[in-house]
Amino acid sequence: MTNKSLAILLAFGAGFVFFFLKQPSENSPSRASKTQLGNPEALILEHKEGGSNSAPIDLSNLSAIEERIGLQRIPIISVAGKAKLNVEVTTTPSCSYGDRDAIDMDLKASPQNKLIATLESLSGSLPPIVWDLSSALKGAELARKSFDLPAVDPPAHYGFFICTAPSIAEKCSDKRVMNINTIFTEHKRRDPNAGKILRTFFYQYFILDSKGLMAFKANAEGVDNFSILKDYLSARGLSSKNLAKEVENVDSNTNTLLSMPLKFDGQNLKIELPKFNESQCPKN
Image (tube, rainbow, N blue to C red; front, top):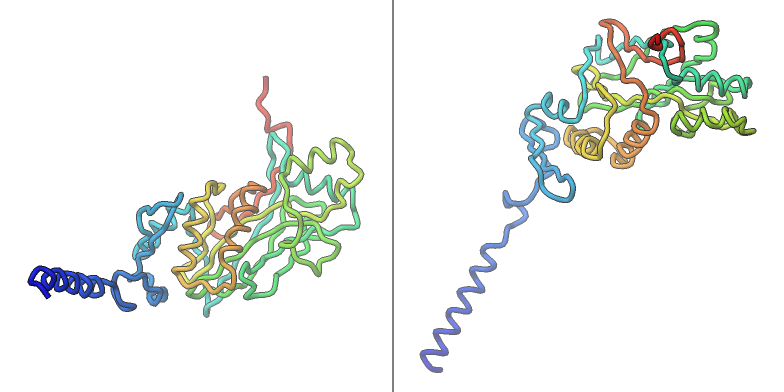
């Protein structure tokens, strides 16, 4: 073998060894680790938006991430790991037709149906809690009820629904969701099926942990908010069999119904159902 051939062979061998030495091992810091999900203070979650890497989600500052998603924290009294939610459903006057008008139209067309509110675990960790609003709101503009829910870490997420159902032994999450203007159009056209479809009129999403309740402070819009929400819940260790599908449903329900955000008056979570009242319209 010539000196030139030997030199070429040695150079090739050195390059081959160098290539394999540079490959990251399973324990290399360059590989993403999922072992830190139980320790939010230590975790920075890389988030992709629009197909490209954006700024990482740093869970050492939860309030900043919650602000980025559009969540507001609401203080809730918690005793022995149980949060007491005092919920108030009220009809609010409006210059435009709203949720309460749609509800009244449907119930007038199908008086055999019930109006119920359900508080449902979106991950299925608890059975639905049902509230008979047909009785609570009969001849009234205000109804109140208290709910006890686990307030622990990792957090859990829930939906508060108002829907029509054939009985109070039902849930709302399997009812039709449609834009409220579609409901008004059905009744205006005197569609023979108007009011016969069981549907959801109100929906709001919230998260509950040991520090209290988090809900959207305004109508959440845009894909990014919900993509970040999914990553945030996953990183905080929320137990779920299909988190992506659950957040997809939150997105769809929220942006289809555009329900009024939850409000807190210091004691009660207020759910507002707008109803047309001409006195609320500007005078010419």
